[in-house]
Image (cartoon, rainbow, N blue to C red; front, side, top):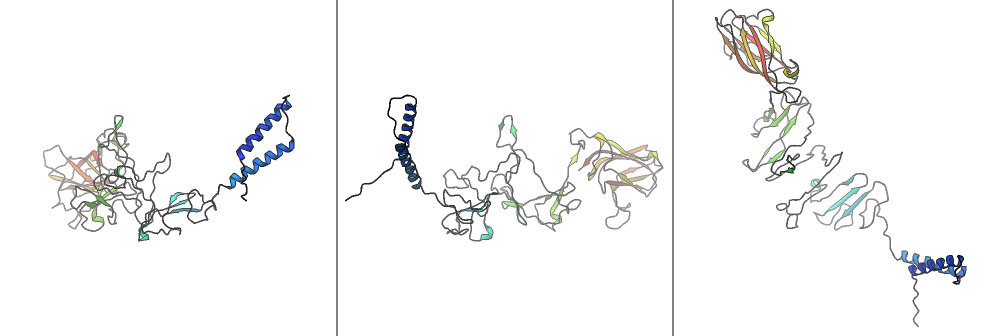
Length: 400
């Protein structure tokens, strides 16, 4: 004999209970409808609660994943506050996907996404996070993709950060486009994709770079279709003194000979406001004794002048005029960086063989010539040749 199947409609019983309660309230207000007994109300309420419990029991709640174990879809890892949550493809063992190129996601509660996002056969070459934009054919073909692989955006923090103990913190390679693009220039109100501007680039200064080139090899690879072979090595290094060194393309010689310093001729004011630099006279010896023949006279340049005629302390060279005046016979002046001694040895100034800056003869009241001279310790020096003479040093521009 078949057993009659009992059913409980939790929602229907609850509706009936609500209706009876409303009737009970109407009777209390003077309604003529019959009022059910208290036992009947309790019986209906009990049936409604039992039905609701039965309905909840039919909905299985998955158990939380254990710490360090793969999480199931729809299940949170809540065993500890900062426990790893892993989502693996093709295998249930942590960090062991079934294929050599399986995908994995490791998330930690306090730090967002981290860990192994792309496995390869050689685990030392694993990629933590792999972002790839699908191509026009929907297959992720980089040749047809125009989307964004990885996008990092922040209002006041860091959008994307790369850190490495001894390797490369960030690397950008493009076969035909920009290796790295900073900022974008705006033409009117429309961003022109063919006219890109420059964003801000911060470089930490090296304490071993400054007056001398960095004694480090060039490692960064830059790809260019305009260069024979398709690529060359290029880097920029900043010294703590503000100097910028760029690697040469030839890559010939020692580490230090593979770099050249990047300097700029400044004809603007040193305050950076773009005002024109005003030429000024830094020295006129006619206010004192005449300079003897064969003498080396040191002139401090860096830091000299004020306002629009100021030479910054980190200037490395100056451009100007050297004037000979007040001499009593034929002779010459030679201008050079401070520290060079007179003699015939290597690195010395030889008055009989090395070039002069100004030559003068009797009968001339004064004669001038322009010069470009490097500075050593912010100074240059003037050699007086053959006869005593006064001289004047005027500055028209500087290199920084």
